[in-house]
Length: 308
Image (cartoon, rainbow, N blue to C red):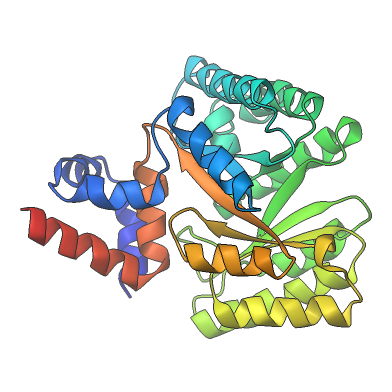
């Protein structure tokens, strides 16, 4: 029941100021956010590579209000690409982007977001890696999928994300599960109305399994974004039933959550990618991590109480 409340708080400037000032916030933020700068995140990429893991890097920040901020987001990703290139880490790290950060919600936002994200996708391809377009709230998805389709004309390895709690997603999965596609399936972490999304956890999980089956039986490359042991085991079984080798799909989990499981899956021969966020504008990302799992919220509450 607390999840929707936390998601609503993620859009509140008043709550942003309160949470940012709370004494225990930094301790919990550091669990989920790898750092504020490229310099701080590069050692984490190197450490992951040493452990047989891969990463996807997200420069956090979504609620931009000007074209100049959208261009700054583009430049932050281009800086990241240059650092990965200099360290020869392109094959170990891809990037995840939210199109809202590239100007999607501004006037002329669809064209603006496409114009800003294209140089990032092009630069990523030049160093041997790629970009995945994160899914945001349901009102943005038609634009996201159209930009994904446009980018794939020149950069077919460009990935996208689908969310099992949305009614539309099974149809999206069937359309996307084609040869050469890269599709990450997650449950979803935005507050969505009952008119477009399942509200019951059991229904969301059932949809997740149905969609995972569609992806595994398709011709694309599924990316299983989950920390749920049951869903991970089901995905492994669906992969076996579909005749997939272990390198023909991958698991993805968040930085700071179930790190031992990252290592276990990689040791079994699975491709295991750690979703690693960094940057100074961490609030929206952080609040969705709290909303996803009650244990995260309890951990945050204890931290505030013990630091207050």
